[in-house]
Image (tube, rainbow, N blue to C red; front, side, top):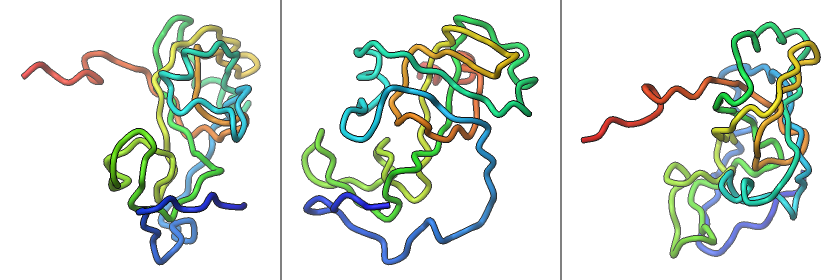
Length: 160
């Protein structure tokens, strides 16, 4: 895979995190979207500003795991940004001045290119393992790591 050049001020690691194997992850399916390199929204908020058809294609062996999900329900998708660099530790984001460490950003450029988005289920076909979603900010075919229900009592921070 060809990598995009680092921007001024960005810092590359002296090793490739992709060669470090501490655990194994099974992709549970793939995310289908109209997006490809060059036209993908930068985040889920921007994805919702653009009308698109997006859905999850779950591994057929795992369709029973959809039991209990409902159309209209909010879920959290955790996905593997498989076409990104993993060796940038300090970035120069376009949306802010100066450089920032990767752990202070939601950029896909990170040692483990995990991303997450809260989405709403728009359709559900458990027999085929397809779950329609309201929007997504990743390339077509992005591997899906997990689906979790969004639960306000867990996912909202308490007022201080």
